Length: 268
Ligand code: DGL
Image 1 (cartoon, rainbow, N blue to C red):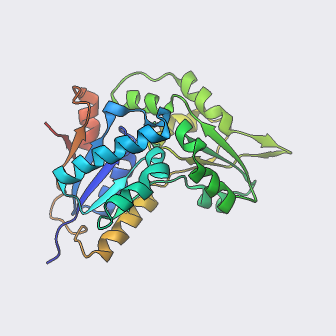
Image 2: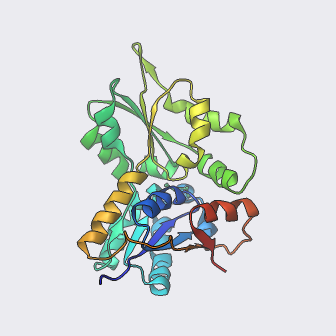
């Protein structure tokens, strides 16, 4: 009998829930722990050194407390910077990251105009620029560093009103027209953004493919767990996981419901 996998999914806030939902679908028989470092949110505005220090220190505590079999960094802003440090510090523990899905967008684009919508941190990373050079040299790639979208997504999940005009202003730079062609793919390169996808679709000046890497990340998690012979697929009933918040702030009713819908209970 294989050991049941314990999966720790980590983000600066609630964005990682978009990845957790796909992992839950792919690995319903695993134990799930979700951690939001909301005390340090938003990561997209932190300097690189501060972000490395923050994630490394916190991850040490989380690994000791939860003893996961795999860690999913469900945050582009952290993954594009911290993954090599994490893998060097814990070589026996598999880490799965979330990085901008530039390659599939560039492969699927017909107009060769693609945009990457991300935090200011992610668009500034060497890692992101290397991805563009390696996989999208045949495309014109517009990197859009959004100042407010992650915060707007947090507000939405907490049941607060989100202003459509503000959302529209954040996504508008993704839409480019050149020589009669238009952007046809927008990479959602921050895990918070799929939480606002309905609004994006409504507010977009024309229809595009929004590329969300979460299903691919879930497949990667399945693959890595399989390689390590952990069990994750079979279940009699979906286990309830736990969601931890580093700030310890009270959790509004709307958020408790959003967590429950994803089989997570707020940890006391
Ligand atoms: N969810 C995170 C990401 O994927 C970023 C949000 C933040 O700025 O903290 O990049």
